[in-house]
Length: 628
Image 1 (cartoon, rainbow, N blue to C red):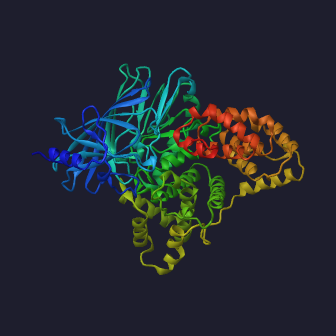
Image 2 (cartoon, one colour):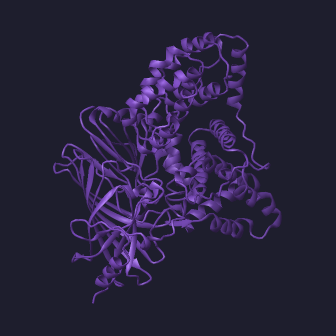
Image 3 (cartoon, rainbow, N blue to C red):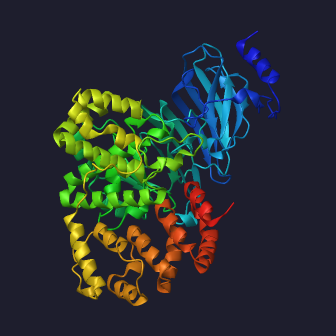
């Protein structure tokens, strides 16, 4: 009797309740599916781990489905007769083993208590199995996929699809071992409508082909959350030898002008922390429904058009996603509890790049604004909240809960604190060695601390006390020994704000050379009580309501909602209908629902706008508005 037949018998014997698919292999079982999901994954990589994926899929816009085959090369380290993958919002047609495609038994676990975890896919294998092939199709509601109708794009002619896999949404479009500590290489063949082009987090084409079939190679191992796909009416233009931009035709020239510093950023990054390991660094500008500012998918950052302000004042986001090519993509948090290891170092690195491109006074503004965001986050969560620690405990929670300014800004503040203690030169040498030593590997908080204590502190008790690791990493709030953030340029903004509050008219203020960051500082520090006359004064001089800068609009609209400045409401609705970035949507809807009239307006807008938003945004907004 073969191992597969034995396991099938065990499957059947253990069934409490099951449903069979047409081929009779897809059985839902209860008692068999006890699994440790402390890392938000049903996979058991200590037994069987994936090492390479060959993906062969077709993108079906009419039915809003991806169908195809995921073939994994595996390392059966324990000689196990079963392996586990994560799936959610997809159907499994059949599973086969090896190149000869011998059909095998598989079972899909019951629906979990927490929807975000999805369901385990348990597959019968032999002790010597090297390849597992899964035939599957996604469901239209798959959370990682956003299917856009032509009218939701810039060109208004063709549909568009993009994925967003972080944190654990990759399992909704590819069956996978969906944990950040598991890395694999991949090849992909993607079939799309002939008038469209596909790009991935891999080596990419630069023009459409006549067949609509695109092949991709990602030779560097990556975790599943960095799997990415975009399909649409896309064109490419280079910026430098290793950098370029993808976008819809109507957006491409604007994007190239805005991101013209990309090649310089790449060179600056390499100067700091060593060679770029991913061959090329390109950016794709997605339609405005993309829920984040950017996503650091290797070789191809996914970016929101809301960073295109016309004056390159928001391109620190590109520096941030580029910095992830070292901190995050190269050395990756092993679990989502260790998320600060990705983001804290990346924010610090981003600002070092911006200091190289611009100057320290410019970077001081970014650091000061980030510190204010951190203070707001701690005030929101409570200074004693466990969620204000760097090392998190996200067991039994959606890992998206940990993606706050604590990881980003407290993490960056901690790295700056280390710099202040040991000096920039010593820290840079440490980080360059760290990125090289652990390249293409995963890192836990505890392992990082052990490495820092060995290589940087090196037995120096006085230095250890000054760095104060335990307080920074394992205690809530901001330690008392934190670096002081200061900005001379913001001080000048505050002087002008004080004059305006004393009655000086807007047109008399000295604002000629202000960047977006100075305007944001001005708007953020306006008092909670402002007369309509003062709002009209500002708007008539600076035309905030008609601004094309999404960052400025978001802060401005919060004031106009609070003070019922009705002249801005048409522009507010247009903004909420067009933009899907959660960073902007969440505070605006929160402000709207504070009043009965505002809640009615929010409900009306949301009913129309919700189809334009990605699930990452609607999950947050549904809760704010009380939608089921």
